[in-house]
Image (cartoon, rainbow, N blue to C red; front, side, top):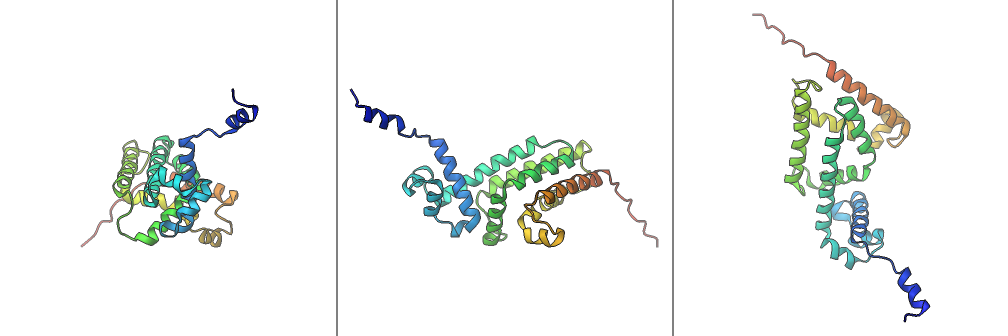
Length: 217
């Protein structure tokens, strides 16, 4: 029969939760990659952030590149939800997507690092990311068919514009501060930008294409 001390040790021993451990590693890795970029990130620091040893990290993810790929896979899954869960009306969608971007600053910094390192070259999970962007383009085409977005706009350039108005103020906070006098993280700025996005969408949707000018000989 086990002694009282042994029973206490058995009761107090933490229960292993592999999924929780994986989530903790991924959160730590996203913070490390966003702060240092892929090249500057260190597995040892990720392990310390996750409060595990490097051996356990390698057990779950293999190596640094596998860990990086897993982060992108999860982000792609999240963004699929951003599309499907967004409101139908464009202004409400922009407000919703801006809120999501505000809560995902690590991802924005990670994309900045990737742009500096890769430029116009191929990137990790490119095929999957192209597919994700194509789903977003198809969502915009569907909105055009329903009259929610001007039908004469090229959806590719429209998507780039949307990504710009959503992410640029967060990706370049120094520009935001100089232009508006407010920090990008300031709740007042975020409220103002959300209201701007709604009004921008209203102006976009209610505009009317101008007829082509008649060229006289």
